Amino acid sequence: MSDFSGMTSLNPGYRALVLGASGGIGGAFAAAIKADPNCGSVVELSRSVDGFDITDDASVGAAAAKLSEAGLKFDLILCATGALVIDGNGPEKTIKAIQGDVMAAQFALNAIGPALALKHFAPLLSNEGKSVFATLSARVGSIGDNKLGGWISYRSAKAALNQITRTSAIEIARLRPKSVVVALHPGSVDTGFSGGFSKAHDKIQPGESVAMMLSVLDQLEPSQTGGFFAYDGQPIEW
Image (cartoon, rainbow, N blue to C red):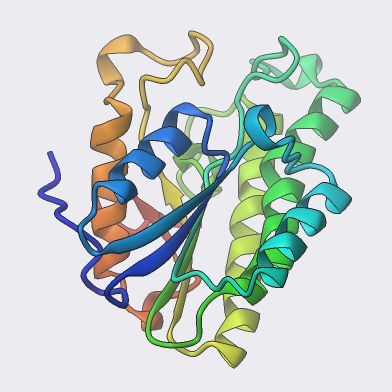
């Protein structure tokens, strides 16, 4: 269990933004940050509450523009969107099961969506002290760690997300040298996200996963931007 007690590496009274705040992990992120005595305010966006559609460029752009017009800058941005099962379609067990539209839906939500978030919200990162933009990836998105096969669409979308995050981190660092832009693996979290495709005894609770991930983000340095890390702080190979 993490001993996370606050984001002390960020400016006192830091401002946070949680994308996908109505989800299991997103909601846990928002709750943990609100409880952080070092946090000044938290903005939450989600499809169910705000009509925020991570897969729609206009929707993401409009949400970012509204925050920009309000003069808001953020020290911490968490993109906690994503899904393993979309429209009832779970991960494939074999190449023969690949369907183009199902794969496209995986990429739209798990790769293109976070790319749009980086496009529109990264300009809202504060340039005063350390700032963090984290995307939720998955260990199965690691190409080097893939020993079992299967889950082709989901694995590929998360691998694409890793590249998107890595490339964005390089560009963002040019204007914000104190930024930390990383992909995080939250573990197998008990949120219903997996739709029964992961073993129950391997799951951890959302609050525990989030506390550990926030602790990791608090400890990361700008020199580690562009990395891929597990909830326990261990780097994951690409």
